[in-house]
Structures are given as structure tokens and as C-alpha cells.
Image (cartoon, rainbow, N blue to C red; front, side, top):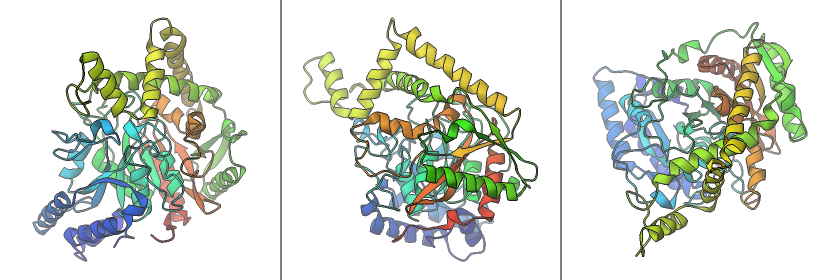
Length: 483
């Protein structure tokens, strides 16, 4: 049962081939057996899962149906879950149990999903390899000495190792798409505002967006259907109708205009990945797509702009973790200043501290105009580049990452080298666009992803292209040895 996709599970449950309770018990046993070598989970929720599975079976017995009714998933550990630890991968929140469910958690629970647990992640979603977690690095099932990507690495590792069919993630600068690429999954970052951020612990509020990680575009469509929609509790949520993503998967690609930016194929890209991306382009051409070279001239400024804006927002968002209201508190503080300093110094890891300090500097008097304001202007130029490109093409295609997964520890002493792994993904967050990564082949036995970007609220277009591609390729069906 562990090799079944979400779509296959939905059909199996509808046909009464097995119950949600049977499936849940099977997957919980598999997690218990295999996760010690992956470290993909921070918390397992066996009692809740079995309770939800029994409830889902009862709802089906009463005539209810639905693609997610009884489907097992897991949540990245920054989605608040009532009464269950929500750690954000940090010592700061190691003892925090949320008093409410995030909107995404509540919506998926209402649809009948079964929560198996909370997955490992870079601390406060700050990282590209899932190495900054207080609970230790998650490991890539394709090579246990390598990273699964970050910051949603636990979700990606668990799904890739067939511990469960799908999981939620969040994407601030590529944190769904990058781990999807490095573990041979399909991962979708929706348009900013498409999925509620209420109850999702913030890293950078103007960039964060929740989305699905699964093995196929079809499964991402099913999970996104349950996650998307307007939420009055989230001031950045957009009141836009949610289409039936599954119904739109079978559209023809005849005449689809695909833009390939020339800036994507510079010196930093592994030439073997470039070759796989060109092979993907040829496959889509066979399906009727029309390929056009385009330009995104301001892409070169994306990383410096992102690493000013994101840390600036993080320094503001993380100021609430002060040892007073909730979370970690140092022992025997001498005074209020000592309480703040030691609680934050002991509770936050080095990467989080680094980004807080960079952000505070960028927002400080005398530097705000030179750094933060300038970065926001560059952000607008990047968005304008995309708007101009989408006047000429329907989809933009390129690599998801410049390299395959690196070995755990290889980039620990050089944060900038890790930041450069986000070069192709962060532009979508700066512009608020939807982006998808799908499997495109292997380099030295390690997965490689191809990224698709679309205009605002065109997640259905991305899913349609990815689904048609997956009907004609088998990369997404490959399973890591031993899992």
C-alpha cells in the first residue's frame, strides 16, 4: 500500500479495497521502522491518526466521498496543530503546543485527511538543506549522506521514501520546489495569497506560501484543492475562486508557448542538469508546445535582493520570541535584558541568529534606504520582467536547482554557497508567482527537477503541463533503493 499515490488511495478507499484505518496502521508501522535512518519526522501523532482514520471510514460508510477522505498526510512542523507540538525545527519552540489549528490544517482535516505527524525542517524555515534543524538534519533517501533540500526537507524525504503519499510544505524562496527537485518529487508553490498563511509560523511574511509535495502532479492537484481558498483571518489571502484542479489536468499542450530564459543557462549551472532540462523541452515540444527563448534581465539581482528582504522581515517576525510569552526561556535571568539576550541566544540556532542580525542591520536608521528600500525596488523590476515575459509566453521553464543534492555538511561553513542553490527559485517568491518543480532525470543517481512558472493564479496550467509530461515520462515513478 505504501507505493500508492494519493489518487490511487482515493480509488482504493472508494472501491472498499482497504480502509483508512488499515492504511494508516501500515504507514505508521513503516515510519516507525524506516524513519530512524531518515530523521524526516519531528513528531508522530499515532493516536490522532487512528482517530481520524476511523472517523473517515465512518464518513465513507455513511455515503460521503472525496479524494482526501481517509488519505494519510503529514504537515511541515510550522503549521500550528492544536494540542500537538509545533516546533518550527527550533529549540525556541521545542515545548510549544499550539492552542489552535492553522487554516491549512483545519481545511485538510475537514476534507478528511489523516495526520500522521509533523515533519522535520530547517529552523524557522531558514536554510536550503534541512541542516539547521534543532532535531538534526533530515536525510535524502536517494543517498543518506546527502541533504533532501530545505526547508521542507522532512516532508520531501518522507514522501520520497514512501512513508506516506503526500505532505504539506512552505516556500519562502524555493523551500517546496528545491527539496522536490532533490528527492524526485513534484512540488508546487501557489500564487502568493492563494493558500492561507494563518497559523503558519512566519519567516518572511511577504514571501511565505504553503503548498503540496507529492509524487505526481495529479496528487498535488488533489492536495492543493483541499488547501486553497480565501481566508478572512489572513489579510494577505486573496478572494479568488478556486478551480477544479483535477478536472483541468487533461488539457492539450498543442500551441502552448513555453519561454526558456537565456539567463538560466550561465556558468553556475551543472552542464548535466542543463542537458536534462533541454531534454524536457524536447519532450514538451513533442506534445505540441512551442518553445521560445526569452530574457529575465534582472534575475542577476534576485539573490542579493532576497537576502535583504527576507532577513529584514524575519528580524521583525521573530522579535516575538523573547522568553516572556511562550517558547524557550532561559534559567534564572538577572533582569529583563538578560532574559531577552539569553533566551534568544540559547533558543535560536546560528543561521537564524545570522539572518536576524542581517535583517536588523538592513532596517536600521541610515541603512534602510540603502538596503531594504533598494531591494524592494529591485523586486519590482523582477516582477516587471516576468509580466513582460508572460505577454509573450504562457509558461516559463528552466532548472529548479543548479546542482544535485550535496553532502550533509559540505556547505555548513559557507552560507553563501547554500544561498546560491536558490538562484532559480527565489524570483517566483519575490514576484508572488506560482511555480512547480517536477522530476526530469538523474545525475550520478541523484534526482534533478525542472521548474515551471506561470502567471498569477494559473496553478492549473502548471499542473496540466506537469501531468501531461508525467504521462509521457517515467522519472516520477523511480523509487530510491531500499525504500
